[in-house]
Structures are given as structure tokens and as C-alpha cells.
Length: 163
Image (cartoon, rainbow, N blue to C red; front, top):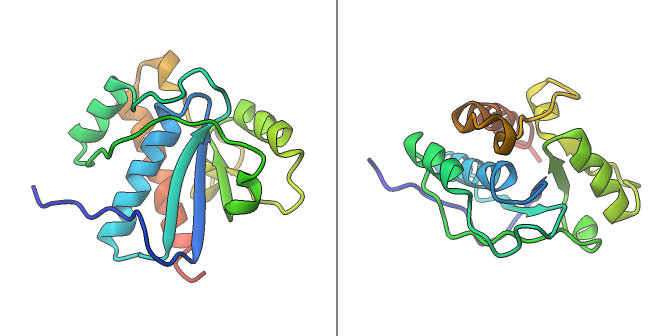
């Protein structure tokens, strides 16, 4: 398998922060997927990261079954330590992308609202507004969730191509 190119540093035109409950499954996987898609497309204009709405998993790596699904699909997992989003993140990122309705409610609380319209859900980017990314912690369908994440990330790649 060819070595995967990951985007981690440089000049950024678009800053994207993925959010989920614990930052060990969905948001961490979305970060890995979009970084790899961007690298393969030669998109060096993206800064991509992820965080949690809670403190439950702070410091933890990607959950092993999620990591297994990523690796099985050809994604190169990078070192990860879950972190919680903070109010200052709102000003630092162009797009803050949650995975489900609960994430969106928590983000509005943490950030004090969404005055600049930066918040969206990942499936909004795939033309499926309001559709949540399933939580594999409960469904145990890590491969299915990865397919949802890939769909949303393809939408991000397309919609940010000219920013």
C-alpha cells in the first residue's frame, strides 16, 4: 500500500474542527479521513483537527474498534489524544462540525451560541441536512459509521475546493 500523505502544518485557508461526544470515535475518525483525503488531493489549504464536548475521554487514543475500521479501509491513523473543545475554539476555526443533535446543543452551550454561523453537522456537507452520524459506541457498527463519515468528508472536499 502506498504511504499516505497527511496534512498537519503549513498555510491554511480553511480551518475545520470536528466534534463528537468523547473525541475517540466519530470526530477522531473524521479528522483522519479528511486529512488523508486532503493529502491525496494535494489540498494543503486545510487545517483539520477534532475535539469532544465532554471530558470523559481526555488524553485517550482513537477507540480500538474505530481504529481497526480505519486501518481496514486504508486510512493511516496518526497519534491522537482526545481533548475537549473550549470557548476560544469558536474564534479559531472556520467550520465546527458536529456529529449529532446532542453535539450541536452542547456546542451552542460551550460557545455561547453560534453568532457567526460556524456550526454544522457532518451530513449537512453531504446534502443530507439534519441527518446524524450514528454513534458506534452504541451501534457497534464502526465500518458503517466510517462510510457515513467518508460521505460527509467528500462533501467537505467538494464544497471547500474554491475557498
